[in-house]
Image (cartoon, rainbow, N blue to C red; front, top):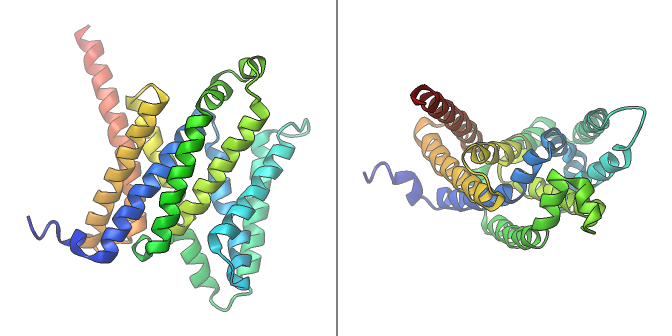
Amino acid sequence: MSSLAEPFTVSFVLRALLGGVLLAAVCALVGVWVIARGMTFLGEAMSHGMLPGVAVASILGGNLVVGAAVSALAMSAGVNALRHSREFGRDTSIGLLFVGMLSAGVIVVSHSRSFATDLTAFLFGDVLAVDRADLLLLAGTVVVMAGVAIVFHRPFLALTFDPRKARTLGLRPDLTNIVMMVLLTVAMAVAFSVVGTLLAFGMLIAPSAAAMLVARRIPAVMLTSFAFGSVATVAGLWISWFAATAAGATIAAVAVLLFFAVLAGRRIAVAVSEGTS
């Protein structure tokens, strides 16, 4: 048993574990709304649209998370500005901004002497390199996002399921939409610093999607999502230690596998229930 617990006796693995659990909390608070509102493609696009801000911040010696947040906010503002366009749909505007932002970021990064290293670090990150400052950032983000989620729970709920009623009730859906977009921006900007953009998106979507298969009420879904994300973190770190695989990628892969396991279990349960009725 002591050998099985060996990974979690190492300080940098313990920091990665804590960082992953805090990240699971961040993603649970916003991932549920992303899926419920059909904003998955926007989340994916935003995860890549952060590259220009990160690249510029890196070259100027600035804070990468701030650069990512500024770039993601610029993209979300562009999406909001184009979402009512009659010439093309919302997905088209997201796709165009996604490609444009990603291209701009690659162009900026390509001027760096360590182009391949910089781009790889941005895309895949290194959860094992999480330090005390990252943990404090994640913890602070969890506290702030939890507060916003509590205050805006009713407006978020109304906007997601009945925008017209939200306006009738005076819940200001336009402001609510902006707040939700800011939450998504913050979640992706902070998450990228832990596991990179591609893997952050997996942690944002997979645990919440699995949670929505087993829970109904939004608070319960968020708690279940957090549990799935935490399990994926523990299992992913444990597997990566003994299998010598990339820790961040393994965590994300476990999160996705958990979703399919829950989906399969749900379908089996439904089949058995229908067979006995």
